[in-house]
Length: 123
Image (cartoon, rainbow, N blue to C red; front, side, top):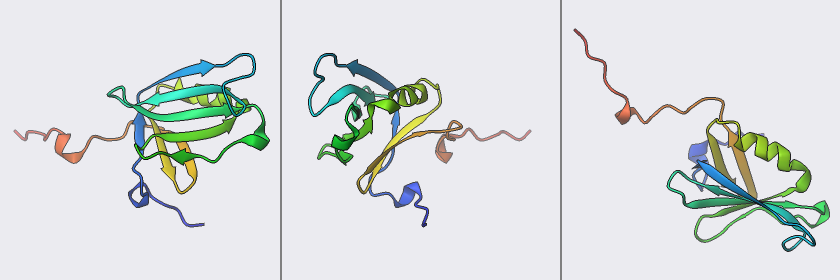
């Protein structure tokens, strides 16, 4: 299996800064979707949707639209795991490659770009 680095991805990963969750009662939203999480970047711009389906046999493929908004589709059983990840207070990235959306919890804060690192003064 070949490992793909972020630099090789066609669509660059997006950092997630905030989220909101909507839970639908009754017959659900549409296409057997029970819960929808909206993910936002640090400017408040919508970056991705995570849709949780009750019937696993009807889960749609992950996608990305013309504006770059990613849609991830998961079974409703994974809602608590995703919520735990979002609440972890660690950096979160959302990315899309081919037909698969991925939510990544990073173990550490990524270093700033090299031009933003202050240079040490030598006495």
